[in-house]
Amino acid sequence: MREVKVENYLAKEVKKQNGLCLKWVSPGTRGVPDRIVIMPKGQIYFVELKQVEGKISPLQKYFHKQLEIRDHNVYVLWSKKQVDEFMEEVLKD
Image (cartoon, rainbow, N blue to C red; front, top):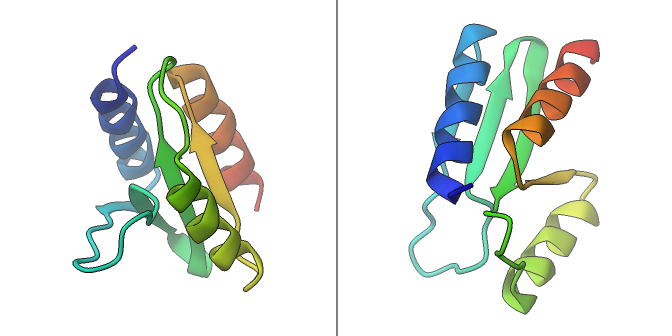
């Protein structure tokens, strides 16, 4: 499945729950996750989206680690099924 389809599906599912799914574009900083998901009650998630044949670059791994050492999780989603699992986890918080 193409990355854009998974990304669009994520945006749709987040919006259904009254959340925001913002494209993260950071000029001059490469490797940032694709989306910032902002949910009600102050929940913020960083999401990297990949197609099945895709891979996480060393720069992306480095930036994900920078977020993680600051107590933020980065979710890497490869399919609509993983988006559904992510949303289940988000709704439990």
